[in-house]
Image 1 (tube, rainbow, N blue to C red):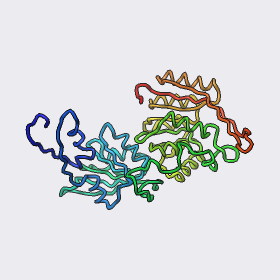
Image 2: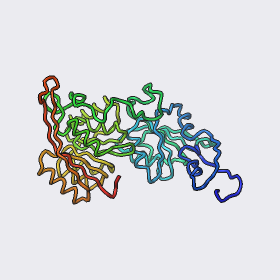
Image 3: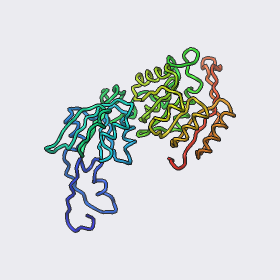
Image 4: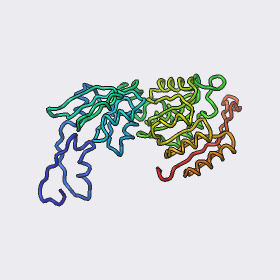
Length: 354
């Protein structure tokens, strides 16, 4: 078009300015003057056919390269519109959402005489051949906090400021679910250690986080608050129940899997980042075999930290270790009330960074 003299017309499906061709046409190297004449976008049309609002929805594009990340958004959020493509359609979405119940509103060939809207559960989507182009509205789970559906009505999609301030919440927020004396959290779940682990992992929208040895569910809920999909794993049924309760109370989506690591990890989908809260060196080694981008864990002794660090290095990870010590003071008398010491280890896989 840039080499053409005179006016040219480009026809685009969907909306040319919404994941469409406008961005390419406006690239500075082409020097084109662009006039956009929009029609109703396929996303707007899909929600209109479903009779649903969509100011609280996430919108993602799924093709072969981005399908896994699109699925992770569907795991983490209660309402997602997926613009599909051949090989990354409703059937593939349903297969990759195994273990997570969602409802699919599948809108085929919108705006044509063959337009059709079908509602199925995600586990049934793979049993049918769907016509392209289509848009899938993925719905499921209890409504989260702070979105447009909760009366926010000021920002589309997920409100990044929803919920309480801070990356992590005080231990007392999870005290009734804790394992320690008086309902306190376990030694690997203290507030400052969670904050350091969260900062090293940096979970974000489109990621899948494994939290192995989830305990009270505090870290899993906080990773989910960052917008990531989370699978929380623990061998203790009570820990799984607590994690599920914390997720509901926090208004976040996560999947809880009961089982003993490392064996239970074999059938889980590929993670982007992993926190190992329990299981020690054997579990860390099994996780490293799956090649996530980042791994964080902690150890109580220097010998244990060295063992884990050497194993991560042998797996090709760049390892960092810090000794974290926190002392809680009673500010009424400025006396020590609690002391916590742990070795924080993190591994970064260079060929998958950042």
